[in-house]
Length: 150
Image (cartoon, rainbow, N blue to C red; front, side, top):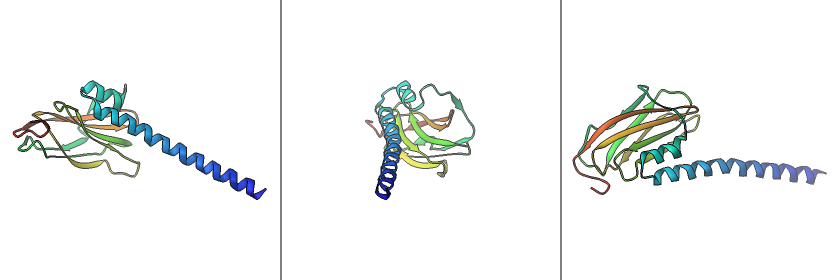
């Protein structure tokens, strides 16, 4: 009887691990398609489906107004919004607009920093996805030396 109980417990644990592993794979597939999209609508459809997008002053994006070298543009995004699931950097005029994507856990601070490539001057959007909405802030950035294809 002990062997049967231990076997069931082991199989139950194994099935739980498999179930937990499937969710990240779905997120990865969705984000991969978003990175491959060449139009803003395609990026939004993959990342946010039909979720409402709202401009928000609660998102702080730090990025230079003029990027002297589009190959290396620093960007930092932070927010005080609750229940943040992910943060995305979208550059309208890049060949593939989604430039960075960060999936967060409940214990992760909603504060990221990275460097992005910009092919030419463009609007840069910080998109913050919560449980039920997507919040956005945006800024125009002028590029003097191109980074992705420029």
